Picture 1: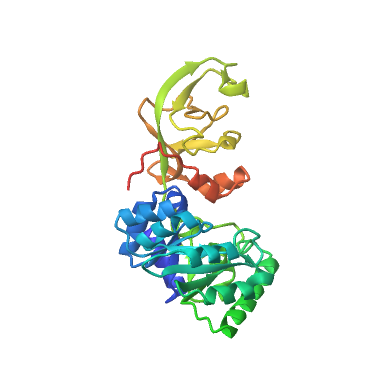
Picture 2: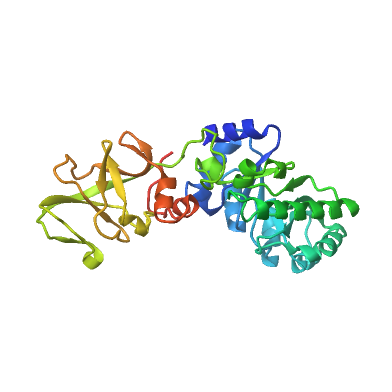
Length: 352
């Protein structure tokens, strides 16, 4: 991960990177990810919930932490106590900030919706929103931002339209005399596909974890996947030809063979649709997943291979057994690497 960060910094130069570590650091472990990146000099993190931010503070993270979720009036004191930056995206948020009685100014980033249609003040209300926010003396407006919906796609017409709208908002902010420290709308896809959107901060998530946001962005950076997912073989059994395997009996052995039970299932993050074309690796050999992936286990046909109880097989990533690209799995099952990595459950032990 440190190497991935260095590659990204080399690409963007002096522009600060805000590392997105929400959803337990995309399944990797938010605390360990943040500690690693903070040692590299990163000064800005983003999470989704107040609780995620507090977890990082309790672990000793001192860098700025922006909370992406909708502002909750009941957590403003927690945000102040733990020095967390807040997303402000509605007039109701502004009223809650006005009503808050705290000892210090709350640090905020104002969000404008330019086309994601999620959080963010609607564009037609942006001027009034910015004007009201600018008049609240109990907050420190440190950022103004938006979020792209299609910046990781080959057709950038919609992303460019969003960028134009965001520039219109920046013009309004300038007219009002606002001068937020950070202007940001570039995510991983936009950083690669739309460099003119970088402004003076870039929010990066998936690239840090070693995966590209899509196949439609330039892939010149030599980033490497951070996560390697392995699981143990807990049983090997001989079965006859015609034996049904797993739920629904959708897989039937064509000949006498050996079936190994691997202790990892969809509750651990192995995507269930992967059973159709999926495989694991052991000693650089592929072994087909046989039958539907269960909640806690999956089965593979090992034939006469020297696989025994206790052997570790590769689910995805890279190790001495070879490489299975999580992006290829995602493409095969019509999903994304975001979905697969964040689906890694709490049961798999994370070793750093």
